Length: 151
Image 1 (cartoon, rainbow, N blue to C red):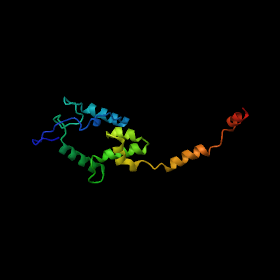
Image 2: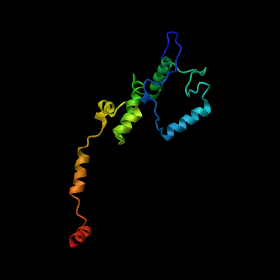
Image 3: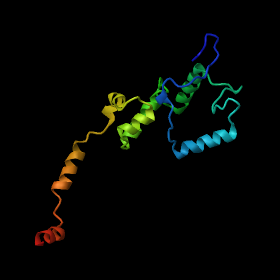
């Protein structure tokens, strides 16, 4: 939140579900360790700060984001929030459940997650056909079946 004076205020997240643990991939943990080795957290405890150690304002972050997007060659106008959607699509593509995705995003319910991202879950028609074929078309276990008949 920015006050009329332009001072940045650090405040708690907007909802209780926003306070959560996100498991980080090893390469992110390594990158953070390298960052902290070069630029230790200051008195504020913030990992990324302005040169004076204060928090990065929303406007300054926007400037830094747009410069990074340009340097990376990403399409003009790509928003930071799109990283959240990208992360979500990766979780879904790699088979994470609705409940896991809900927890990672901090959604209040799985319904909220499905209302937003259901179109990304793979169609399960092929999986359901395969599941039934595997069970009903599998040859019987002859030795076990023969033993049961003999009894």
